[in-house]
Image 1 (cartoon, rainbow, N blue to C red):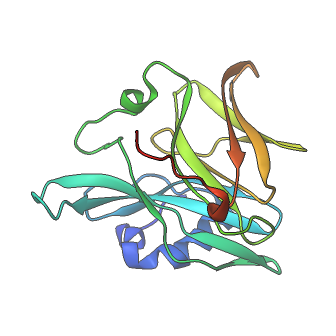
Image 2 (cartoon, one colour):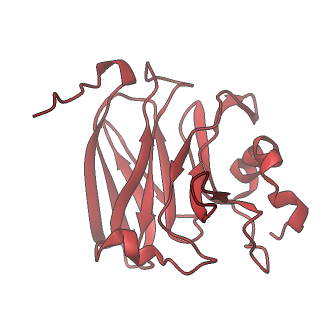
Length: 201
């Protein structure tokens, strides 16, 4: 599926998010440029979904262009999806235009995390979101909680994102094309109001 270049404008992400959830990721535009906002991964839960968009920003300090990701969330609305949150953003290490490869963040691993969003309460329509990067050999991801959800990875530049509507421990497992487990990360989906800040010293 190929989109025209105008479909990769940042002002259109709430329009394009549901399109990605319904159709999958589009082909990468050619050529890439740092004015674009590109969907690179997505995930759906029972009532919630998230789409990860890669974009470029100029640093307010020195003007250097840097990559970051936005992760707008969506709520199931009958047979479609609608936006339910403001945009959450994170810095991102991979820059496919200026040459920072996915392997830089991975450090030899098959999967790593790159950020998360913790809502004040976790449940249907209010998910815990975690994102990261995988090596090129990874073709499937599974989210392990009280149930296991395993899916083919639809991704650009090795990006991944998942959303969970269940609080508590989780694991994210990465599999290669032969079905072999090649990486696993563990964490705990907790709401923002139970996070504890470490005291200095």
